[in-house]
Image (tube, rainbow, N blue to C red; front, side):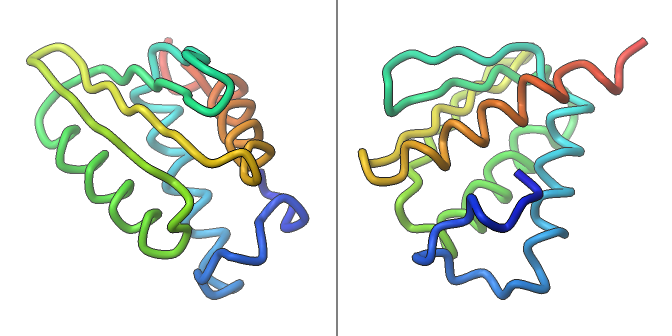
Length: 113
């Protein structure tokens, strides 16, 4: 995901800001990610451990990501213990979803003992 080759041309985030956004996702995955599920070919669910401010953090990051990559659709649901973030894309952007899911798998739990 850090390779700029996977970023579609439709992304409007300035190139210089992309490493910062990747770092935000990495931090979330490392600190909170408890599971990654491929529900459908064009839909991934991230299950994150809950806690103070987690839901707001997830929604803020998803909203900003939608602002530069409008092909993403994010749906966040939460209860006291977890936040689920469903991410869907169109067929054209399936490789981007694949890269995001692979990154999530690679970082899942790296921040936990």
